[in-house]
Amino acid sequence: MAETRFWLIRHALVEEQARQYIYGTMDVHVCALTMEQQKNAYAALARRLPRPARWFVSPLSRTRRTAEAIFANGYPTQPLTVNLELTEQDFGIWQGLPHAEVAAKIAQPPHAFWPHSGDEKPPGGESIGEVITRIGEALETLARVYPGEDIVIVSHGGAIRGAVGHALDLRPDQALALSVQNISLTQLERHPTRWKVVCVNEAPGA
Image 1 (cartoon, rainbow, N blue to C red):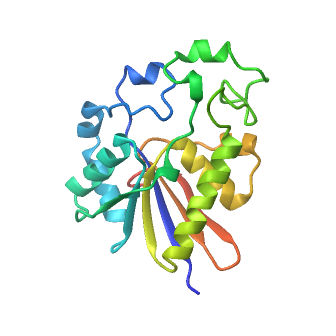
Image 2 (cartoon, one colour):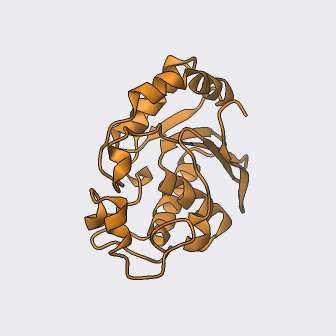
């Protein structure tokens, strides 16, 4: 059986005000100015992504806007299927709080690159370990439904870390050490008995 190829793209940079707080699953707006300035990057993604492919987005509008920018810059417009399981980590009651306030509320020692550890579960939210499980199950389902196909997923930094974490069987703290920049590309392949990581955090046009 041929491998199923996943092309995961993190959404566009969000507006400056939203970057001041933890937004998680909140539906914040993308930064229109940055999207305009990065037209060449979207065109590079349009050239890089496979044709044909099935396209999926999360329920949050920033993923749809990012997909539409890729279409506007050279990739033929495709139907976008919303998959609820591909959304960002739910930070529970931390969402909407400034970063400094969240850092003061954590119960465990922080991660080297984040204010919270991989095992920390925000009240009312989910830990990165739970994200790895959720995203992993979603990818395994897509691989079973669309074996041997190319699947483009426009998603979120936490979700993409979760996808790589699932593919490599990483611990939560290891997954948090992955860098996933806005509009970067991460490519995974689901083979019959194992996962292969082709690239992580590839910059458009690189």
